[in-house]
Length: 355
Image (cartoon, rainbow, N blue to C red):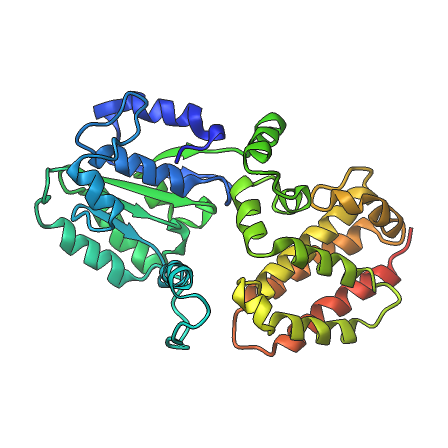
């Protein structure tokens, strides 16, 4: 699917025709639909008779293989954790709530070197339908240095007819040598007009959620589908307890919240909660500097009053401290201690700031 805010780039890609490079890197904020664009380009490249608009016909034999997930010349290299989420979503749609429990062992959030080695082996064989083969690597920043070096060998000496489509929301985390071997395509967030048009077509995705995710349409859509409106409402309501409330008590409440069946079912975890806290303090700092809120516009009046209690330095320190907490939040630490640490730091910033 080509989203409206990506139509111009899509037209440029289609116009390249046979001059398309062997490796492309799609970069931009998460939630724009970069993977959708990569999937559409892969479909076009593998299709026997693309339409005039550049999209795959959807009718030929290769298109049917791809749609059924059985195209022998199409490879998706994604973290095992992402594959598990997609598989779980498919099972839940077909089996309701009574599905069998699987393994409790957490899947890797990285693209591991074995996946690239498997890709190398697969590409060593001639294409099944034609010489054209396509591999999507998403998110490319999920590769560690060993995995990236293995992919680099493929990019330096690409098999004939193979196109690599890398997708990244954090290109600086990629090896410079990986970036240099790819033609980079940068995508920006939609403008106000495009967002309004998308909201109208999407049935009016909540404006609060769209602002919270920085104007990223698909991120807002996913958040809404996961019950984001209720999560957002609770987050704002709970923060209203501070200052004046007990941060340790709130930490206990948030621990129970994050461990609840409802939160687990929609994938709402501590990383996302910390990310929301970072955005909250960023808005407070912005207000203190005379700017406007970006992530919580509906709460601007309440935040304006709160911002008069804080200093820019205090909020900046909070933001940086939360970033450090976020980096260790997925390690096997005590969740309650992590939440207490974060909320105590925030409470101290509220009560200790001057001017």
